[in-house]
Length: 178
Image 1: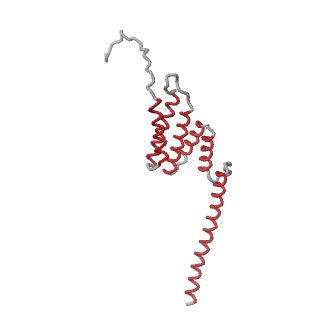
Image 2: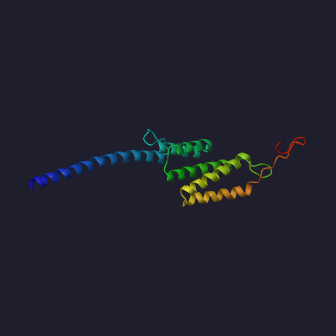
Image 3: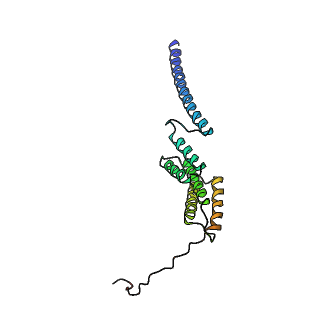
């Protein structure tokens, strides 16, 4: 009986030690995550290399907030190379689309009311990014709303670019294969 109690005490002691070690590891990780969250909330730079994904995401978001859309899009693109989960990919695509949409909004309009080519290109790319985000997270109301907003802006301002009618006359060339 005494051997049985000693053996069970050893087993329970082992589980207790394992649990305490696990608790210590989780507490340490919690402190690191809390420090990153406090830095993000205080709009400070994340220091250290413990959370590279969060650090890069925060940097891209900050670039977009400062209207540096070109660099924000590049940084979000680098995030896609870090093999994020599908949920994270949807968020990245959503933010890429927002940056492209805002980039297109600050472009100038031609005298006849049509969009400049770079604004049209930004809108088309934003539409593709919103659609990709919806493929990854189909229930996102913010993505659906922004896509409908983008489509209303595109429908109102996007006219077909005038075709260049300057063609060369090639009347002396034979038609078809020899």
